[in-house]
Length: 432
Ligand SMILES: Nc1ncnc2c1ncn2[C@@H]1O[C@H](COP(=O)(O)OP(=O)(O)O)[C@@H](O)[C@H]1O
Ligand SMILES: [Mg+2]
Image (tube, rainbow, N blue to C red; front, side, top):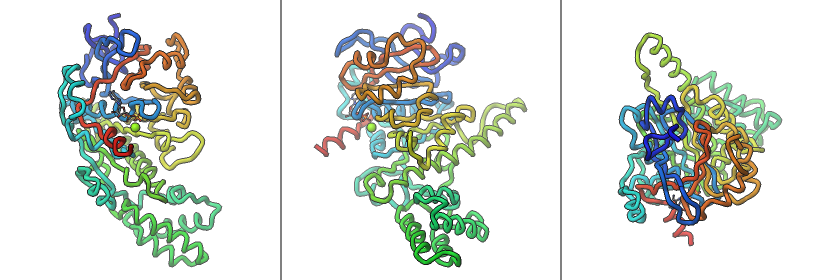
């Protein structure tokens, strides 16, 4: 069993045998250990390392409380611990819908003894937390350590995107008005306009009825309260900085009524801009290579991590971010766009997100429709149905199945304990 192993102590997942020979275990994330025996306290074996230096589509499934966010945190910790030459070629963007990943900044106190069993120690992780500019107070009140704010550039949304955001169609007179307004404002002001300019253009429109104008102006005014849009907007290169791990905390919108679309817009626009930029830079890189220069451009390989991914890539609905993310999933690997999607409802997730993933990580699942949804992955190298594997998994937290297309193997592993404070625990303790 020599292949895909680095000596006797570890195996690399998600990396071709060629690349393992070339790079060894460099650019890998130490994710956990293989499980050697059955039962609730199984014997653990070799270290399981996951390739993070090349683009992947990674899917993490598992029922609620199954350990998805925890596993994401472990991976984030590993990104932060890459050697500098790898790290500065990577940029990690985490979409945090719950507001739990800021605690990566603090070393764990609860998990010290578990870490000791693994010969590991508590440590803080170098991440930066960005929040929507107009929601700064929300985070201050919650005492979440924030490193900066971001906004989205108003002119980056085209008419159809405003319509999707406001749930309007071309059939609605409001939809017609908004597209006319955008067109006119663009013509007059180019790319530098804000919501105020849109609102006044809407009020001054000559063709629409007053009630239609009121409806659109009202929606635009509501969008102002999201504290998200601005004339200038934060530069995408500021958000996707090489070597940086950026937590985009959008939890301020979690319970707010009428703001359901905001997270979707953030992910959709970020995804779109990153895709465009990355395509441009990829060309630049190719030109450097043809000139015999090294591979190096300003924009690094992007990893976008999305928790509750079924909300952004739903199966039977439309969403603002869906089409962009589908592009990431289908062709993103070529320009260096990696996705990590986590969901407790694979049955609600767009099937392409499942079929296109090359690294499948799953904590325990019990709901039949969700198990059925991931069963479409069933590769030829599995010996039994997914059901069976789930039944045989230990019930305790932190166990996971990993399917690796490279080694054509299914692993049962235990995720390593995290170095950092687990804000997921604190939040649930408050609720009880
Ligand atoms: N590998 C693990 N080791 C120890 N505790 C874990 C592990 N994974 C998850 N937990 C604990 O289980 C609870 C739920 O985990 P979480 O990652 O928030 O679940 P999910 O995101 O799947 O809903 C948390 O309190 C977390 O601390
Ligand atoms: Mg979670």
